[in-house]
Length: 228
Image 1 (spheres, one colour):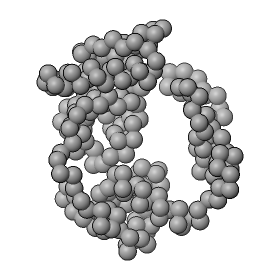
Image 2 (cartoon, rainbow, N blue to C red):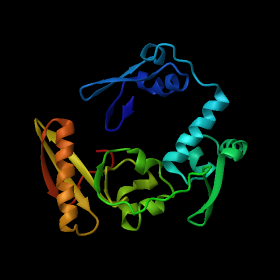
Image 3 (cartoon, rainbow, N blue to C red):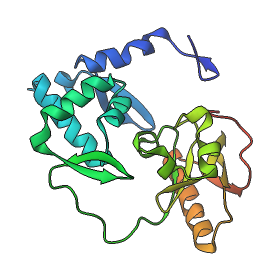
């Protein structure tokens, strides 16, 4: 089957179905390669949670990671019907707390209203389809101004690796491997400060460490398209 400028075996189309039915999960990594296994093999004595309780647990984990959020945003994250998500949130009213976020009524876990003492800071090179950039809404807060045009082709998050500065999308980046060498190009949307440039260098070294290669960093335009 055609997929991402190449061809994939057709069995990959059913991985999500097997996972949804509780017969497939991630196994231990083998170096840089992922593995799959059956949860009963990985966790002897494994017993799936009852459906309604599992949904409630999923909502709480989602809101802990991405809240404040609306039922519609949860539905989008889960690729589920919005009306179903609204009913699910309504059924959990005693465990959730309504708040106003960005002028919209949203929800958090009951009592989970504390705020950090300081705003986020620091630089990260987030990979393709990173959970932070894909799951966080509203998108206009995470991808302000030109970032929405550059890092969200067609409104789709995840197709570009993102340069994150102080919690916000601030550019894109790309890496290309040739043997042990890893060429990393970072395209910021604004001039980097000296501290940010140093932190980008640290992140590039981290990418090289993870991929077991030697990174070479360039600050400049990324010439490849989405998911290249």
